[in-house]
Image 1: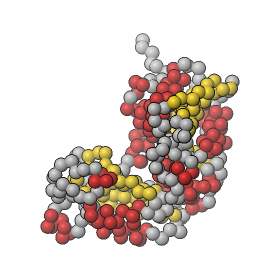
Image 2: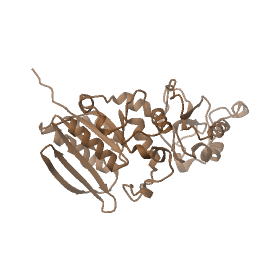
Image 3: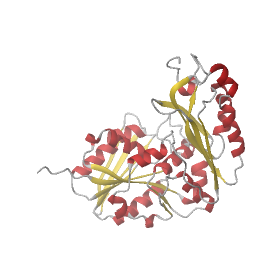
Image 4: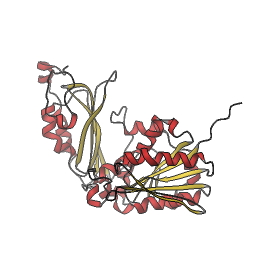
Length: 365
């Protein structure tokens, strides 16, 4: 009889503050006496990745690795995933608690493991924990700071925003762990961003380590929630504290008017994400991603057989009255009845002005 290979459950911890990540890690390891902990940190100035491994007996490894490029992707590919597999394959520990480098998103690790399972056959992701400082939720999720302004950039060209990273972590998490209970509106914001029924834990000591190690991560559910092409209705919002716009249409955006309205759609202390399409690029799924006033527009996929749609979801705090202006800008961007009647919804153009974000138009319609 063929015996299956034993897979060791891994709990991934991501965050933007070392203290919050460390607190969650300590709590989980105390709740899992048979676990091994691994922590990776990146020193962008020295271009060094540091790995520390330890269990209940003490520190087992403390090593510095020179990376070809001190970026998150390189760290995941060159050491984080190989380390998880190496530790799991030894068969010494019942689980692994893995602290990712600050600002590294757990979905990157999950995708690497999903795309190439043969590279880590002894590993399975049991849970993804996002650990945040409960005292700074508004600034972290909706503020306009760049990672570099906080000294958190992982490379010289790392121009990501703090809010961009933190909101994405909350949206992908199986559990959101806070160092303390935030204010009511901030708690409502977390609930609005997180996947439905994801627990919000207001103290690292309250993390249920055995339950997480038993396995709560469902890749399809996590990826479905963060997919730029949202389908179906959104879950109900908390009773108060935040507002949400679910802006959608089967019409494309006019490329010229979108260019003019980007600042209105993407500015301010809000989180917005979704998809749109353009008459000049009818096959491309164009993704919209903005947080804390920094907007990102890109395209990596095609619609294929899926129905084209333009749908952007925006979340803001109750005291922010910018939702009317955003909704008006959204509708101004859509093709008008006259434009559809005279030109249709697919245009044959070789240039539309959005090349800096979307690249050249690959083919005329």
